[in-house]
Amino acid sequence: MKIVVINGPNLNLLGKRDKSHYGVLTLDEIEKGLKKEFAGHKIEFLQSNHEGEIIDTIQAAPGYFDALVINPGGYSHTSVAIRDALAECKLPKIEVHLSNLAEREDFRKNSITAAVCDGYISGFRNLGYHAAIYLLEKIIAEG
Image 1 (tube, one colour):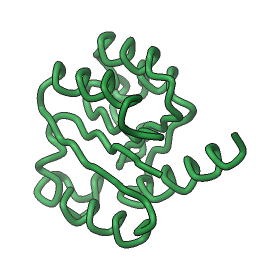
Image 2 (spheres, one colour):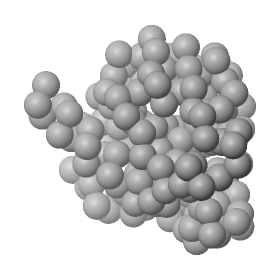
Image 3 (cartoon, one colour):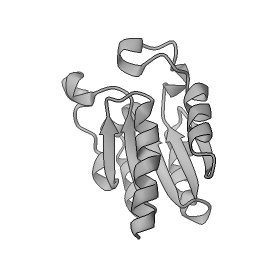
Image 4 (cartoon, rainbow, N blue to C red):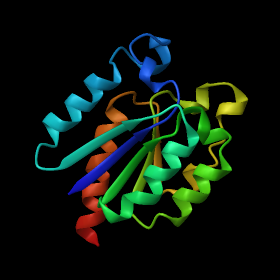
C-alpha cells in the first residue's frame, strides 16, 4: 500500500511547540516511527505551511497513492479549499490531530475538513498517525 501523509502549517515545529499538546517527537521522528512499524508500505510525508501546496498534493494523490492521512493543523478549522479538495479525493482518508481538540479553545473544536474524511483521530499525539494507517489497512482490506 502507498500512503501519503500530509502535514499542515506549523507541524514542522514539532518538538519545539507546546509539548503538553503535541508531544515531544519531531515530525521526522514521527515519520521514521511510521516507516519502521509499517515497513511493508510505501509512506511519503509532506509538510507545508502553504495551503495551495497541500491542495495540489491532495488533488494528485489518487494517481499515485492508495490512501491518505492528513493533519491539516490550523487549516482544519478554516480552509474551505482544502475541505473541497478532500471531498473530491476518492481515496480512503483519515484526519489526525496530535492534541485533543475537545480540550482546546472553542475555535479549534470544529474541523471542517474532518467531515469529508472517513474519520478523524484526535488526542493521541504521534500514535494517532499509527492508528490512522492501521485503520486504512482495514478499510482497504474490507474493500
